[in-house]
Image 1 (cartoon, each protein chain N blue to C red):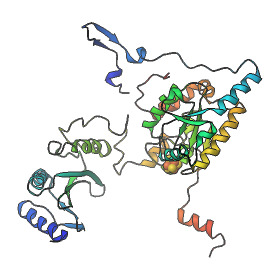
Image 2 (cartoon, protein in one colour):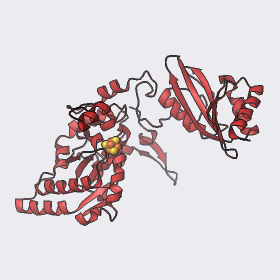
Image 3 (cartoon, rainbow over the protein chains, first blue to last red):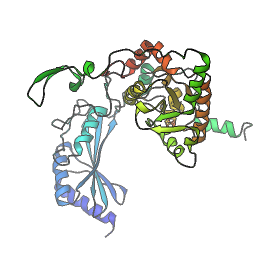
Image 4 (cartoon, each protein chain N blue to C red):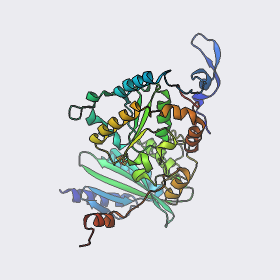
Length: 182
Length: 215
Ligand code: SF4
């Protein structure tokens, strides 16, 4: 059986049990499905216990500012079959809160701490969630949110050395290599 | 400013059952401000000292950014910086040259300041790579400083992203010339403009939870 068939069959089995969305086939061994927020935990547990996805590879977020949503991606791995499945969860961006899964995978606590700090997503009950993780003494809105203006913040917070020029790399190299135009 | 609990003044119970008060910032650190180190009483002696200083450059092995990777080949036979009297040391107390090897996040800046202040006089700072000069490719980053000389007294910059080991060797030679000419006065400059440096440092380090001078 090819990896792709394994993945598709897995998706069919999942679909029969949970209201998951369509399968996005990134690669034969890497697929993504969207899961409603309230079904995430049961789907994760099912994948872990029944389907052999015992490893949480990563938990990360995407800020869909225009849609007013955060996307969380739980990437799971099945080691014996060497396939990865990502579960996507969409959250409303305002007061974003998600159930913690640190009791299923303790490593998730670290990801959740990072997401709380960098995106401002709350995971009630997650250990040491409100301790500083990467930043120290951060006072502004979480810096990975897309409405955080990095350049403006950098200009206001850090003194710049005057005389810095910025070139578009492509035009600049063209000028350097072919000064007479060619 | 949130002070870490372990730094706060509090009562502690010792293993023998006695209670006593600790105030870490006062008890563990010397409060005396730094002082200017005067030159030797006569120029020829100071010149001799400077010659000796130039010939034993001991670098603090603290890599802050990607540029740190260029220091490793210098320690190997291929570039062999040791033949110039340059060597790496594991602690600030044993070092007199601090190479800030690239971008410096505000979090690392805090550690860099502590490390710099713990180094013995006379001490020198080299800024390695464009990140230390003007922010380099992290010029619009929310978390890295753009001008190292606002926070630490820099004797010399080595430009490049990243500079090759040869550039570092040539930088060491230039630093030696500066020291021999009596221009390696960064530590004194730091003391003389102490308030200015501290104000700059505190402007970017929002959780200042250490003494103003870390001996
Ligand atoms: S100057 Fe370049 S190599 Fe050096 S720390 Fe910055 S980005 Fe990295």
